Amino acid sequence: MYLSEPHLRRKLKALTGMPPQDYLLHFRLYKARLSLLQTEDSVTSIAFDCGFNDPAYFSRAFSKVYGASPLKYRIENRK
Image 1 (tube, one colour):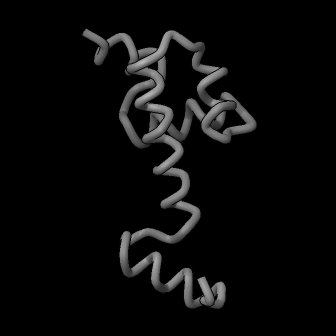
Image 2 (cartoon, one colour):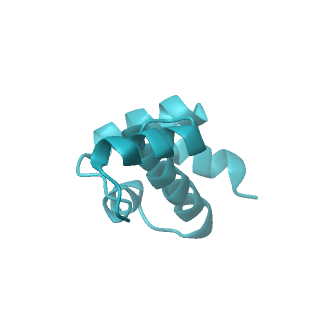
Image 3 (tube, rainbow, N blue to C red):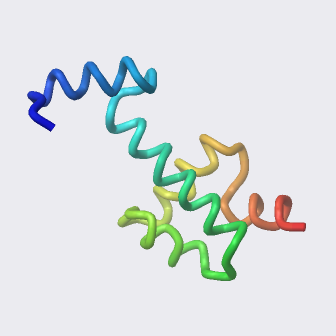
């Protein structure tokens, strides 16, 4: 990309309004949300597939962003 790390951080923040680590977290949680609704995989399996090493952290982060635990979100939104 021919950008220094600080320049890349500034560009990403300007484009998304988030620092890179927050953007990546939201992207991984979005991917997990789609997997929860489209597959029958376990929450733990989805957490690992989306790059989370700790299923408990995944559940806390998911709950913070989407307002419900991953399992509860799956039940309420799958119809």
